[in-house]
Length: 275
Image (cartoon, rainbow, N blue to C red; front, side):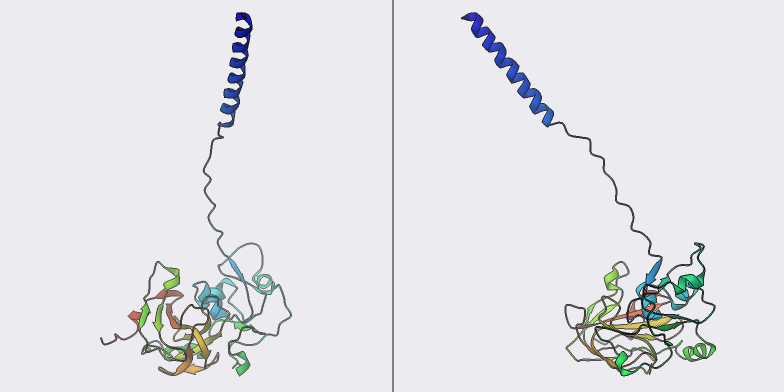
């Protein structure tokens, strides 16, 4: 009997030992090595979307028009069209500028000059059939014309309250927001030439960009309706749009000024409001 009990005890000890070993095996964890995410790739080129112009593409990537022209040859008149590949930086990859400019996803588009006056059909809409523009350095006559805007007089583009201020560290606040009601008048903050009127630039809704000099442009976003066309000259205080909430969560005007492609605080240009 004692021998039987001894065998039973030994058997139980063996089973218990195996259980502990099995459980111990399940608790062993593989060493964890923290792997950092690779940095995002630098965007070196852009495929032209419907409705885009040289000015809207340059605005989107924080470039001057001349920088965009230089990145794509910049020596002879060029045209852009939907699906075309445009370089955003100067590059040296063994591909000629001519080949780079002619590379296209869809080349079945009609080409037109940026300086030609668009028809009313080219006012912003949800779809655009033409996105062509001349990719060329400003002509001498344009230099003369734009010199008149070097000492531009500025005024507020809308009368509503300031609801968001400029912030250099926040990419969503590279301008100011002015509140108001549907249909409130939006006016040109300074004299200039309309170089973009459309809705192809994501995040801005119905947008107008005005060129005031070779360096300075202003932008007016989230409008309900646009009242001017590309190529049209406008004067200080001239109505150019009606306030709305296109591509925004509330009715407002988003107003930006860029100098040599970089956002600047519009309040440094606009006169100080009383009160």
